Length: 150
Length: 313
Image 1 (spheres, each protein chain N blue to C red):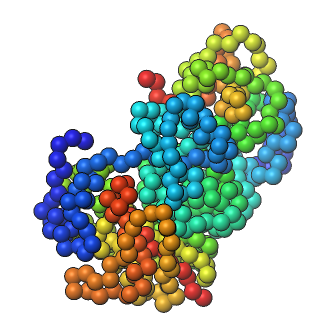
Image 2: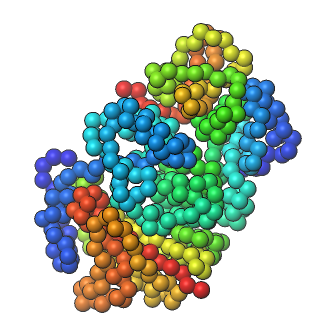
Image 3: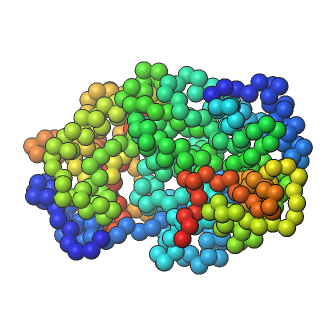
């Protein structure tokens, strides 16, 4: 785990703004790099205490994955940004939400900019889905939290 | 589970010696399934909104009086574990009495709290909810496999101010001496309070299990206490009934640490009894009456033992 450098953070903020219209971002939180592409968010106080402890496995919340210039937000990452997300949002109905949380591909008619869109149901953000060229969305829900296929 | 529950001979003999225990009622409670209950996650959404979502799906429930944000399901026909609300972390499925230790600990926003034996994370998420993103939660467990489940549950619950550590809790004071405002020691135990979940516990129980666990529990409670700042509070909890794993552990702490002071637990809405002070020709500190025992048939849910300890200056 490593703290993002000011340059890396600036790059992320710019990408969040151009992809999703995010202005404030994770401004008051500390961002940590885990591995090459995963980013976690936490508070300053949490990070300070973690530096004194041993056996630390994880700190804070997993919020996004960065690959090249694309950003895939986790469910919690999208929920943290909440009302700050303005672009590349897909509004889902109840049936689509169930499919989303089962990680079942969803057929869409609209075209989107970028490789990822953010799902939204009522006021709830549901993280990112990858947009394929054949008009399907592939929700990025990790296996451990998917609703089981019945 | 169907059929009739079987208790090992040694367990039957042990329980029949316990004061203030009705064995017939206990067996009846063991044969009943535990009620399904959940907490709503106010870190993610307003309590009322989440409850409306559930009602819209036909889930009926009622408030658990002893737990903030706790509800018990009245109609079991909907599997909440497969619901959207669960997958999104809007609710956390947790048994009703299991919510009591954190209510007794009563973490306040801004505090540093250690959950020494945290996996799978029910109580950690409850602590995080009460901290409301202010302060820090350290959730520790000794098992790598169980830490994975803990991490998943804390992620789904949306906890930002958490540190997950993998460590033998007994070693924690080496680098976190007097570091925390509150400590929860929800110790590994022989689980005689949750036999309804697994009848095998009662079939295979023997006194050696309790004695072996008691040794670990004594070390854990002393370690947890040493991690507390002076003026801080520790809650010790198990979901079992044996004196070796409960009162004798607290007695051990009182003997080892002079500044450990037991405090009253006031839960007016819950049925419980006081800690035992006489057992097998042993006499414990009278203060142990301040600890509480909850029998599975008291509230027709799990059985628990809970002690609240203050650290003097």
